[in-house]
Image (tube, rainbow, N blue to C red; front, side, top):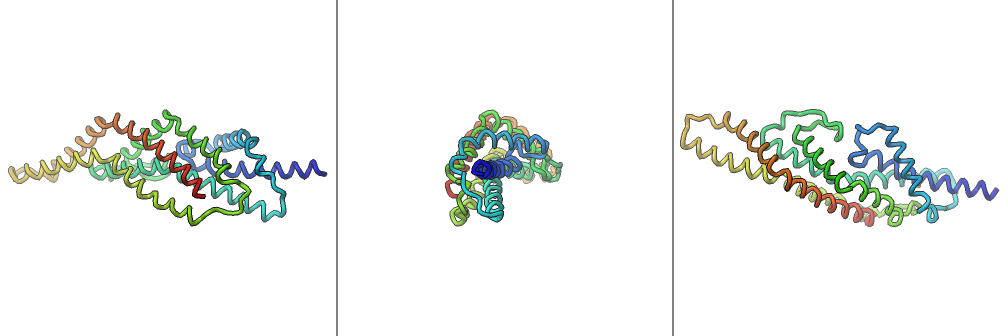
Length: 258
């Protein structure tokens, strides 16, 4: 009888680990996109749960009181996993903002296409920034950093706690400011170049009124913007690498807030 009771407790503990892992894997960057098939996500969730469970089960073996207790703990673990995945996505949200700003400044905001990785309409420049960010994210082992943080989250946010510190977690909303700042930093070289080109064209239009600056500026802005993006690509890659590490720190600080 004791054996079966212990088996039920261990099964419940594994269910809690699987709930957090599944929620995180469904929504986290790169591998959580719709490009990755659902069976692969399910398999990875199970594998990660099997790897992490032996290290955390000692602190999770609590007696089962009722079905309401099981549902509460499972829902709490799902919420924790989704919140951590949302924070992990901040880096890519900043890239999307930067791509949108560049698209508007060079006049390509109307060239919309479906981006399956973001599950939304985006411009080619948005998609390009996202792909470059994904490449940098994988090259510097950003996925290893977040998976390590996910494994350590059980030390900071035990699965057997009854609740979350919602008041402290509300500070996460202030991170929107850092996302916008990151997007502006990504698009800053293009914005400055387009501003200088527009000033030069305004001077030309005053000197030579016969030139239709409104028509001429559109291809010039697009050409200059794309050229600047190509030139600043090495700097962009270096900046993205630094920002990935910063957002990993944000990821850990968010866990501590919870």
